[in-house]
View 1: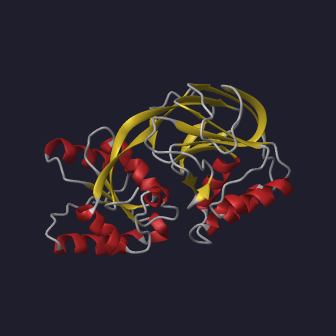
View 2 (view 1 turned 60 degrees about the horizontal axis):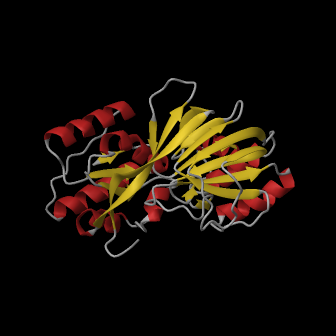
Length: 309
């Protein structure tokens, strides 16, 4: 069981105590991992998987901690269980894992069923850094700036932080000249399909989703399916501040949009570039554009409620 004490503005430690107590009461041997760095958490989990092969790795935190653990659990077959204690918990929402009932979430470790989903693999064309796994959404442009700002805010709590951060970011220039190219591009089954396998446009943001939501339920890639071997791409074209103020509440409410400047694509590999544009993955900083993102099918095993999804 890996805990990020900072998740949920410090709520994770209390959540972890409840979850550990519940699992031990049901006869589970729980090995707790609490470290001062993401790298050390990954090292310890990797060592455990190599030496003891645990029945599951339990992440007590939010999407940030889940993302930290992906290098340790991806492509190992060891299930990742989620006990939500973060602000967004978007991957937990995919599987209907309770976000406000710790005991029920902990019970899924024993009572749930394994599900295999894809992961995304992000590579920076310029930084030379190692590739980065992600499970939910890569944001670029406006949405990345909003996420980075929200991560630094202590108030308000929960999803309201993203709304407050978005309002603050509206005071800055929002759009950038994007260039997007796609391999195996498709628009089948999408609500606002684009055209072709390349996009050149001034855009407010471009999001790439393995799942449909980020920021605690903001529906940015509404048709994304986490086990189809493809990534969904949403391009939000150049909008005025007034148009952005009308669009943001729709996304924040988890509703799909039919705005004519919002178009969607689906592809197995996507390259995105725009000068001076930041990137986030699962809500974590991921450098600057340009990037190339690939879908890696069946890369992660998760524990989900039995009979759901």
